[in-house]
Image 1 (cartoon, rainbow, N blue to C red):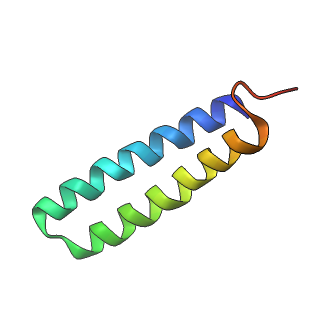
Image 2: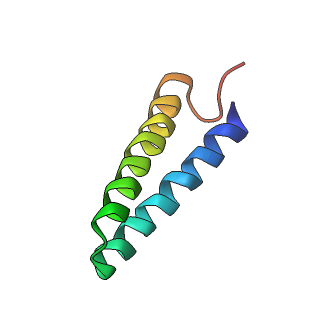
Image 3: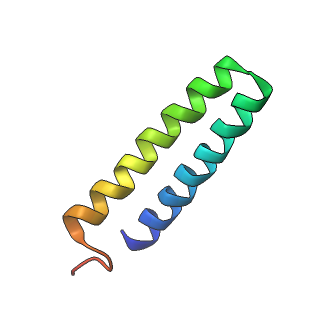
Length: 58
């Protein structure tokens, strides 16, 4: 679960960067999908850190 949390965290960060770039280009569909990915993957990462701690307990 530890490596999966890191990967999902990176996806959330890249989605946030993509959202900022989409605002610069004024691309509405890209803003929606990037923001949605950022919320879903970032939320999963934060919830995993809260429930299992970092590093996760075995």
